[in-house]
Length: 88
Image (cartoon, rainbow, N blue to C red; front, top):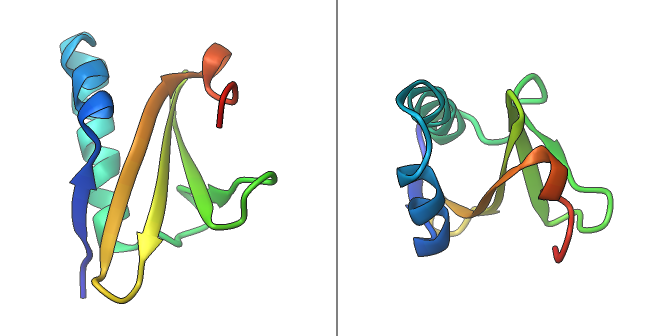
């Protein structure tokens, strides 16, 4: 059973500004996360916050939280690797 996705407005804004190839790769990963957000091949927990997870897509990082009660994956941020771990 898959999860529903909720993408934060700031994440949507960043995704819209990316090139088409990167956008397609990120959307492909979002579909994978909706199927199994805990898959260790595509995600891992953040060391500083075990409630939040990250997924790597090339030089971009997708940060998200899982709400098991509503079976929702909340995408909180999409950031380039160089700035990904600041202000989390």
